[in-house]
Amino acid sequence: MHRKILQCVRITCNLQSLRQCRFYSDAIMHQDNSAQTELSKKYSSTPKRKSARSPVGKSSLRRVAVEAQRSRENTKRGRDAVLEGTENNRVIAISVADQFEMDAVIRILRSHGFQIDPDGTDFDTEQVVHTRGVNNGDIFVFPSGSVVAWSLPEDVVSDLATKTLLPASLNPLADQIEMEDLEYLEDPKRENSSIKADVITLGTKPTLYSVEPEKARVDTTLAKIAFSSGLARSTKLAVLETMLRRYFESTRNIPKLLSRNSRLPFDRRFMLQKTGELLELRAQLNHYSELTDSLPDLFWDSKHELGLEGYYDQVGRALDVGIRIKTLNEKMDYAQEIASIMRHTLSEKHSLHLEWIIIILIAVEVGFELRREWKEKNEQS
Image (cartoon, rainbow, N blue to C red):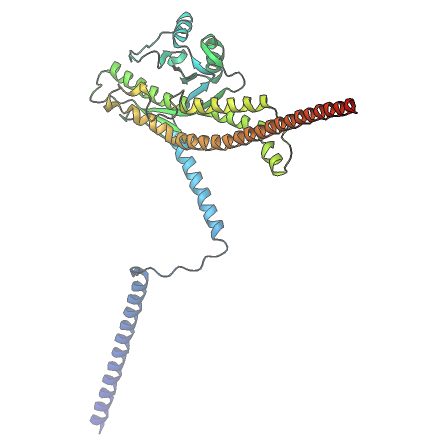
């Protein structure tokens, strides 16, 4: 009897042990499955198909504005980072006259102790005159009436252009002087130069064609001439923009008077003056200068490997020269329409005066004829 009881106890214990083991193994499997599920949730790859976009909320424009502001700040920080640790050099361009007489420019500069073409670039002095001022700052004088200086103070450049070179100026721009400036830095690790974010980077590393230091310096000077020519072009264009803006200020009341069907208080002299000003502006932009040329004659004979025409184009794109020329021509077309309306109105006014004069003369003649008939009738009676 006792033996059977012991067997039952053993069987019960074995069953309990099996249940405990099964429960323990189930718990372990459950933990493993839970852990695997967590890992799969955590490291599961994103679906290949993108989910549909949620409707745009009211704050989307604000987010766009914030992102744009961050982008501008990042751009400014990037520009500051480029200039960090580098001397803040400036390129200053000033336009003071319609033209410079280049022979007179050379005489004036030599009389003040300046050396002409110190690097031996052999450019035609009728197209550009290169000299070097204090602190080895390069000075370039262009026949378009513009002076471009590198690493020179603004007051020095202004005095040179408006006072020293004044005797060589043809039709000086007394109250229409324009000045523009850009920053630049020299990078001895680059062979090519570029302009980005209104900063000119001059690559001063010698190329395969200019291993000698003197030759490398000449290449750098040629790059400066190309950038200076583009900047002088922009400054000259700014002068024409200012002149056209003043032209519009003198004629801005004409559309209002026409819309009110009012009489234009302008005479023939005023109309001829405004027509002449407009024709002069259009001629200076499209005919008498190289503003609209894709490449000035200055760079036609330059070596292609120097890439001077590319530097000239880069300045034009950076300063929106092409867009500004197109806009200026469109504004001149509008000004031409106003001038045509003025001319047509004045012509009608003149024709009306002639008609009234003819009517008065006919009336006078009829009066004399009636008087003669009346006298003859009285004599017969």
